Amino acid sequence: MSPARPATVFTLHTIAALLLCFLLADLTHSAPVSSSLEPPVALREAAERAKTLVEKIVRDIPAVHAAAVTTEGLTLDSAAQSTNLQLMVTSLGIPAAPVLKPPSEHFTLDVCVRRMLAGGRLYQGLLGVLSERVSGLSNLQADLRDLLTHVAKMKEAAPSGGEEAEPSLDLASRLHGDYEVQVAAHLTLMQLKSFCHDLIRSLRAVAAYRPRPPTKR
Image 1 (tube, rainbow, N blue to C red):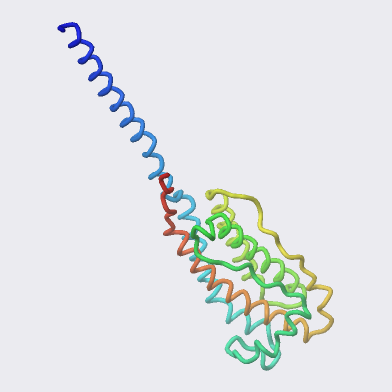
Image 2 (cartoon, rainbow, N blue to C red; image 1 turned 60 degrees about the horizontal axis):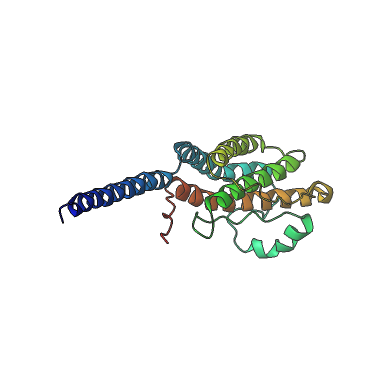
């Protein structure tokens, strides 16, 4: 009966060693998961710088509008005019800005940042067309250019699935007279202001974003 004891001891040692290996492997595997939930520092810093710049753009838009749009009745404060000018949005071919939402499982960080970039490029293009017919837009263009630089850095720091489709602009060919130019400048600045408010909310959410850990099977 005595030869059975070493086999029993050997079996217990083997089981303990295997359990220890499984435990170490599980700890080693789980460590990167928690660290990967932390957004890159470069992403958070770029988001904070972008948010500061967008807040400046929002503050500057009223003064830019007052300098660029001189037609009576076209003001940023009038809510009723949006209905009256809705047909002009279609007539002038001014695209709507990409929809922005805070990052989530259904609206990924990648999509959020790509739409930020697409929206910034849209308004950079619109202001570029308008600046050939309207004065007072140069500072706003410069701020948008800097904003795109920060958002591009966010895109580099975040996982990217490609580029967001950007609408084609046909604004230049539709600016037949001063009235169309004034209305186009007014609508562009109004839409830019609204887009910037969405952008601030999304940038604030990106800076604090923590993706949910993967569900264990």
